[in-house]
Amino acid sequence: MNKMIFTALINVMPLKELLDPQGKAVQGGLKNLGLTNVHDVRIGRHINLQIEADDEAGARRIAEQACQKLLANPVMEYFEVAITRQ
Amino acid sequence: MNKMIFTALINVMPLKELLDPQGKAVQGGLKNLGLTNVHDVRIGRHINLQIEADDEAGARRIAEQACQKLLANPVMEYFEVAITRQ
Image (cartoon, rainbow over all chains, first blue to last red; front, side, top):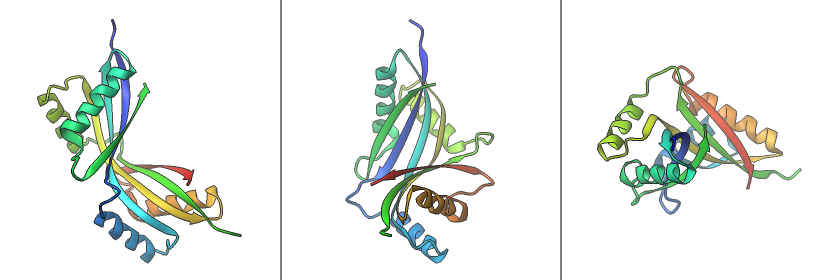
């Protein structure tokens, strides 16, 4: 079977229960720039992968493994994975 | 008119023409962990904002201003904005 190429769009974000000091700092910066209608800034990482796999489920499995093994720290972060066909 | 709360989902990514050394390093790490079917890793920031605005267009305008003024460095990065109603 030919492998197909999928794109994985991954967000790794600080857990909602935790403070996000980087987000707080950015929110303060935005206020100083006059953007006072912005609240609850949270900052994480957006990661884009190309994955060779047999099908979408296989690509999702690989993306989730990548998150669990390397991309996300489960003590402080959660991740979201979206798979699209290229 | 009552203001509404919108959620802005923002991705700030390294320009496609530029090398992404952090992405390259992560790709190497994934290979060492046995995930050899992963290519073209690119890493940027995912930013989540709550915005008070009259309508979706107004919220988008504020989110784009935030990107242009503070969140993205146009020399090295591009940004994508998605607005959703909370």
